[in-house]
Structures are given as C-alpha cells and as structure tokens.
Length: 138
Image 1 (cartoon, rainbow, N blue to C red):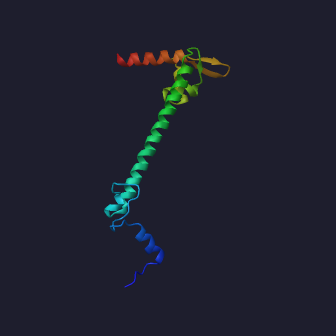
Image 2: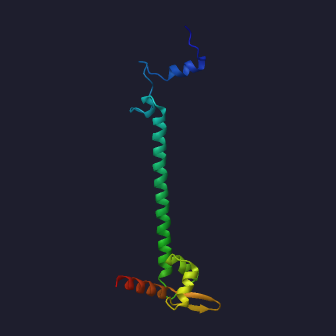
C-alpha cells in the first residue's frame, strides 16, 4: 500500500531519521522532553525556563533601581539643612500630606513656613523619627 502523505512530507519524515531508523537528534546527545511522547512536557519546560529568566531579569532591574534610588537619596540626605515639602515628608514617612500637616500644626514635627508653604528640615525629621523610636521602646 502506498504512503498517503504527500511526497514532501515523506521526504521530510525520512530525512529526520538516522541510518538505523531512530529519530535524528542533531546537535544534542540528551533526550528532549518531546521525545518522551508528550509535547506538552517540552512546552512546560520552555515556559519554566522563560519564566525563570524573566523573573531573574526583573529582580536584577529592581535591585539596580533600588540601589540607584538609595544612592541618590543618600546624597540628598547628606545635607541636614535641606528642606522637604509636605509631599516629600509624607512619602518618607509613608503617610498622607494631611497627616504631616496635622503633625506640624500640633508642633510635634518641626517645620518652617516659607512664604505660603510649609517645609520640614531633614535634620528635624530625623530627630522626630528618633524621638518616636525612643518613645516606643519605653
């Protein structure tokens, strides 16, 4: 009985076999997951590999960004007389601007008014944070 596949498919199929009739593994001596009968294994292995590569790339990028940010913040924080806006102060404390304003109005957080806006000195903020830590440990 003749092979029902087109001639081109028969040629490709026969070229992919070694002389002994086993599948040709060009460039690899180890078995591939697809050779075990389930092509999903190869797809799963590929997805796992790509996922781990992407995760590592994201970790590296985040690490680099955090290191750059820490370096830039350290350079800015070296000036103890620098004045922070309420927004910057709120970001550093992880609170809202209105909470910072409340701390300023209650004279808990040292601040000065420059024109119409409030500014918090970096060294004043550090001192306030230190006082808060000391009070919590009592």
